[in-house]
Image (cartoon, rainbow, N blue to C red; front, side):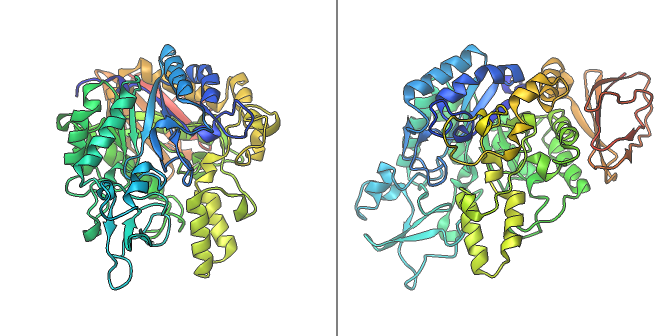
Length: 542
């Protein structure tokens, strides 16, 4: 595989609304991000993935865009955006924009024109259908509960919205939509951005009349055309959000010979704590054997053929230390353990803001304190179906999207130093103990562990390009693997539980050295160690 700059890069996702507020209005903004670039440089990342900052009425926190070539007033101006790109570039950091082209806002000029009449030149920019037997065209559901069809009185037809009814789906069967999107992408590429993260890109090939949403038959044709007309002419990173991907599907997107994307986000590991065939809110405990099996599959089946993305968190997912770690007695150890096993696999690691200091899930008392549209819709839907309030809240505490969206905790001052105003979403009350200032000043912090992991990746081609071999596959407590490349070998061993666990390995090594551990006094005598709760050790092997 041809080597690319993003193979040994580490990406940091910023959710702008919650990152840093520079003007005391309670909402994070672009100037706030500029203020914190030196912090990100200290962490060691090379790329910022910026969640949407485009003009938007904010029905779904910026994922409903009304103007792709302007900036939401709450976040600042296009001059601020240009300054952010420039200041980041000066620090060797590239900006990856969030591209949302499955749908727009219902306040986008295209949709305003589209809904005026069936004869509008913009009518076919969206998906309109006649009623069937006086009701919805078919049974397609919205991700945010209810039907994906919304009736429009003005023209007597339904429009499609796979998400909120204020997020009408674009019609990718219309070539004019392609041209409009490519013009937008080239507008941003000409500003010198480092690429695109592509929101729900697997849905743009939908065939609604056949109830096909993801992985439609023309999807890859569209992506190859997009590559040719836009980012294929630039040396940039592109990553697609693809919820239904398998390794075989991933190769269609990211085999370099196909000229589509650099990589995709696959979510197979993320669904392992939900009941089979149910919604994400229907919880079950994580089975470590299943988690190891999924990672093993993706690591080995993509090796040499396509590139992995590595992540635990994003703006839609709960905090990993609260989810699969232990955010109470072993918060620091388990956060470091989870980081270690992820960052030393093959692929590009993604860090979500606050993950590097071990931020945790939030528990608001009342549903009224939550902001997220998905959470509120689910709550109302389940209450109407007779679910108990307490059970619904437990699901929200575990999986709700606002867990990731509480403001960044910078210091122990009021509102965690995020704002001098009143924050748009309540800061997690544990900010006095968990914050950036404390983390930077403590050499044993989670933050400094992340710095070491990033440094290891940059200094060792074996961590970037080495083969992956899962060890102790049937061990229900220990996650262990080897990475090997050009005679270099690393062994990663991690206890995934809060009790002591023994790692048994049949191979003996001539020379072993510990290059990183999440306990200060990890033993060197033998790799067949008894591991303390959440202990993670990285060995260099000869």
